Amino acid sequence: MSVGRPRVHVHDAEGAGLAEAALAAGAVLVDLEQAEMVVWEGGRPEELGERLHAGVRFVQLTSAGIESWFEAGVIDDTRLWAAAKGVYEAPVAEYVLAMMLAVARRLAEVVEDTEWRHREPRILAGRTIGIVGAGGIGEAVLRLLMPFGVRTLALTRSGRQVSGATVSLGPGGLERLLGESDYVVLAAPATPETDGMISAERLALMRDGACLINVGRGTLVDTDALVAGLRDGRMSAALDVTDPEPLPSDHPLWTLPNAIVSSHTANTVRLGSAAMALRVNENVARFARGEEPLGLVDPVARY
Image (cartoon, rainbow, N blue to C red; front, top):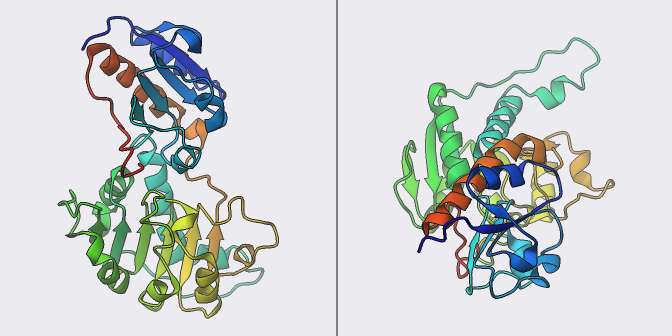
């Protein structure tokens, strides 16, 4: 059902231009108490939950990972919720490619050298890349990998055919993916089903010399098991997310030579602000036309 010019409340803690994007789509900006749609950037989930009223029919969140909203019990099935699924795929995919090249070329070791020293690097060509959670980010990674001549395994919850992948797998294919991949990219959401999915037993399935790249959530991986696997030198890791997060300054992941930790900077507010503004603009317009928003959250699947 079309709503004409929607009454939208924009909470934009970072000043990312979201109010301007909503206005450009025809919104009337109002206080939350008068809103039928809310765009929420920054602030605690509980802060919004305490102020929501029956007149709010649609909430647009600006984060792709929304597990904290479910943990706080804020997301429900009485209104539409949208996350930033797919919004940040470009910067995160660039990060994944950068980490693959950094690991292949052994840059973490090279930059520590203080004398001329030969190190044998690798190339990506001919390698096998496994992507766990091949949604928007995974498909963006696949597009960037096309010139490199790699073989790719893409795993999704539905087992659908993933565009650009050599092989598409469902959840039952995780062990195969781990056993065949030189680089394993984790881009899955945090849900009860994915919590701790990369266990000690599954890490043991990875090839000698393989690299684990995590841009999903730290809780996907058993951190103690990962530290043990890194200490025995059999694998490497590039981690934009960790468990716990923030990672304590005395945690061994900071000092292991075969681990790169990047403090959740694969995407930042500044990197993603233009894309998020476009998403807000599109979803305000869709709400006004009575259409389903992009990034719709499934309250049952929890993402």
